[in-house]
Image 1 (spheres, rainbow, N blue to C red):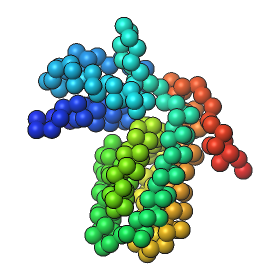
Image 2 (image 1 turned 180 degrees about the horizontal axis):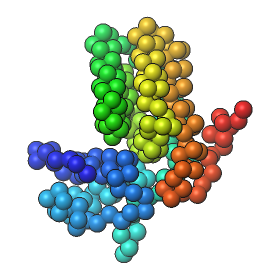
Image 3 (image 1 turned 180 degrees about the vertical axis):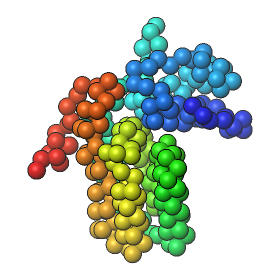
Image 4 (image 1 turned 135 degrees about the horizontal axis):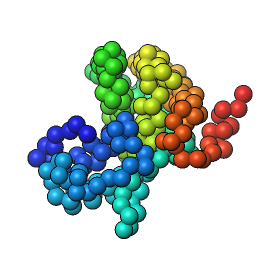
Length: 238
């Protein structure tokens, strides 16, 4: 958990961000116990903001707080990942449509810059950095549309999907493919083609459906033993 806390900012949200990223990149493994004392000592804070961070992570479905037993990182739920992807598709395809009507040259330049930074991170083998830049790309589209609530919904859903996304890198979901998909989204948004923007976003967000079963089979210790929900099984039918 390599993060420095900024003293001028609220501590608990910074702890949430640090712990969330550590869970997403499997630095803190599913099933692992989280110690209030250890984390408070590591960041040089009291236990109160650590407790607040645990509650937020619990609400995001990343940790489980068991009274008198402790706090544990939850195993990855295939069902929750699939449900989160379903919500992301509904919201982000609409965002892509709206962005195609509202985009300006500055917005295009920002999205292109983020894609270039993703490619640079991939070139360094910095997969954790790539996931951060991937999140920034999707949040930038929400900001172009000027819909804060949609951005928060996407951020919340990513807590589940990003765990699988990170495990899929660089093999099951090759980064060049993801970058190509990002470019296709921006190309459609830039030309004002709302239908193509939504389609490009849908293709991109469904990529995880190809990775999910394989990743679960490769890392059975990290996943809860659950079936995919009906809406996802239907998508995977030939």
